[in-house]
Image (cartoon, rainbow, N blue to C red; front, side):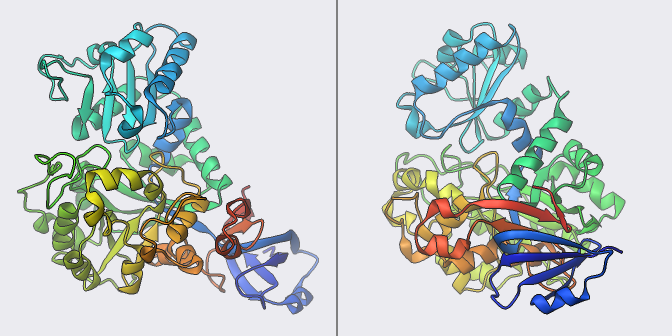
Length: 504
C-alpha cells in the first residue's frame, strides 16, 4: 500500500518532524531519518510550516441542523429587536408568499423589548415565521405559523401577556415540536445541508463530531461521503429500538458509530427553564422546567448501560445536574474500553455534585463558547454568588473528571478557536476574565478537544502516535503560543486531515 510522508511542519513534540500514514492510520512518528525509508511508491506531503496537532473533535453538535442553519436567518445574540425584524422583513420580501421564514439566535436580554407574534405579523403578514432563541429552547412564532401548525392561540400552552393573549412564544417540548414540524415542510435539501455542515466544520479544523440526531439524521450520515467522522447519540424515542436490535455503544465503523441515547433533564439558562435548586434571581417564582421530574430514571439507565449504550444527559441548572449525577452514578458501570456516559453542559455545579461526579464513571461534556454569551445572563438570572459555580473547568480538571469540549452548534459557533479562548481567558478578546480561577491552560484546553474526547468515546485518536487514526488539525502557528500571547487572530486553521486525506 502507498504510504504518505508528512513533512515540513511543527508540532507539540519538537523532536517530531515526520509522520508516516498508511491505510488511514499513523504508521510511524519520528525525525527526518524516516525519509530514508521512502520508496518510489510513496508520496510526500509538504505542510509548508504549519503547526500540526491531533485532530480536534466537537463533543456536542447537531450536525444536520447546523448544516440546515445556513439556509435560515442567522442572528447574532447581541442583535436588538429592530435588527431582527429587519432581517425577517427582507427575507419575506425575497420568498414567495406562504413560504416558511425560519431563523435562530435571538437573545431576549439583547432585544430591549418583549418578542411578540404581532411584531412578526407586521413585517411578514403572508409568511409563516418561526425563530428559535439563542439557546434553541424557545420558539417565537407569528400568527400565520400558528395557523400552519394548527395551534389555537386561545388554548396553546405558551407565554401570555397581561391580558391573557398568547404572545407567540413556545418553550421546551412545544418549541422543539414546532421547529421540527416547520422544517419538515421542506426536507428536499437535506443532503446538501449535511454536506454543508461537514464542510463548514472541516474549515474550522474539526476532524470529527459527536452529534445528536434523530433516525433521519442517522440514515443520512450512513449514506454520506466519508468526510468527517461522527459518533451519534440518538434521541430517547429511539432507545427501545436500539435495545431490541441489541446495538451496543460504539457499534459502527471508524466514520460512523452509534454511542447511545440523549436525555433531557431541564431546559436552558437564557430561556429561564434550566432546573434550579433555588429560584431565579430575577424571577423568584421560577425554578425552571424538569420534563422528567418524578420519573424513575435509574432503571432505564441501568438497562441501557447493561447493553453497553451510553447516556448523554442534558443538565444545565444545578438541580438538573444533581439529578443527572445521581442517576448516572447509580446506573453506570466502569467500562474496560474507557467509554463513559456524560452530563451535557453542566453549566452550574455545586460542590456536592462535583464530588458525586468525581467518584463516578461520568464525563463532563461542556461548551466553553457558551460562556461568551451566557456570562451576563448568568449574573442576572443566577446572581453573582451562584455564578461563581458556573462553567467550572478548572475544578473539574483538578478533580480528574474527564472533561470534553464542544459547541452545541448551531446554538453556538463550532470554531474551536472560540472555545479554546473561552476556556483559557474566560471571556471575549479584550474582556476581563469572568471567574478567572476556573480557567484552563492552553495545553489542558486542547486536550479536552482532542485526547480526552477520544478516550470518552472509545476512539484510537487524539495523539500523534503509531497505530492511531491519521486525523490532524493544521494551524498557522502554535495555538498554545497564540493563547498565551492573547493573539486571537493567531488561532487560525489552515488545513484539516481525516484518515490521512487532506479534506480542506
